[in-house]
Length: 116
Image 1 (cartoon, rainbow, N blue to C red):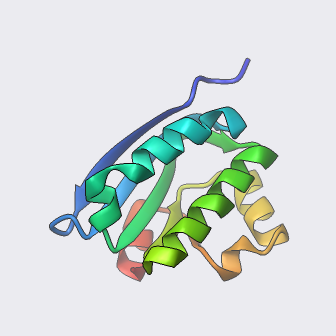
Image 2: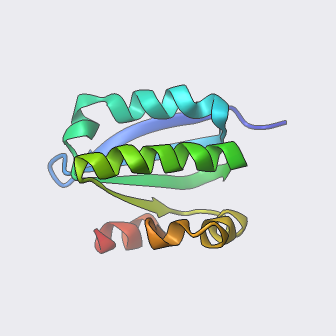
């Protein structure tokens, strides 16, 4: 059974970085949660967004579609997106579909934050 999705948001660097801590499966059913998290005024004001998958998360094919939609919205605002802690399988999918050309994908949150 798939774990229920949860997204919590925290901020660093005086609000310039919004970190989405994602737990469970990121699917098409997670769209509302991702949209709600992104629409928060503090996130809208952030220059950078980090999707943190440290907490045993997985992304389905429709979840990757949600990330791509988020990336489009962020590009319109001039924001930068990074991903931290993807599983090996998720990292391979990012590489296969070419998302690593648009999104930095890192082993740890610390590495991703240094890359901003």
